[in-house]
Image (tube, rainbow over all chains, first blue to last red; front, side):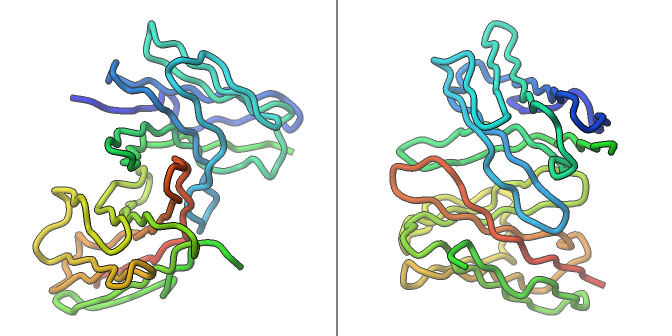
Length: 114
Length: 113
């Protein structure tokens, strides 16, 4: 079936290093992907998105890469900080008619080591 | 604070009781969503409103669940005859017309004993 999934449940990174979180999707018709960050006790927070007509998009300290050939996307966080510790979800927008039915994967927990 | 507001933050109830949660979206957002999240999992879509109209419901939303958005502003999610399997975080999100970003509240954590 269609799914959005993550390769690693937990990622530990030294403060100051770059982090890379990977995600695979199975629906080749998907055209919009989103990365969310969820801190303990809070709801998911939008980080960055990318459409299928792009292969790279950059934000502040974050970059999302999309490889449609292998149905894979990644989130790169530069100079990881303690405040980046959270669970990161890749999500797929399966909406139509103008609304967003966002389907989340299981999530990757990022632990930043001081 | 002009973000999405949910209350209560925590709810403990006994099996068989009814519970109701409230969500106040960002004021200019006409779209409102309910999600459910269990420990270690990503949020799962439950239902979606555009203004006061409920346009889609997930199969996860059994007959015991009902959601309303009577005036197109705040929304309520009611669970009747709660079961232990209903224990989860219930998240509300909103978005503006033409904007694909969802803004989530902090959720209501439900524990059914």
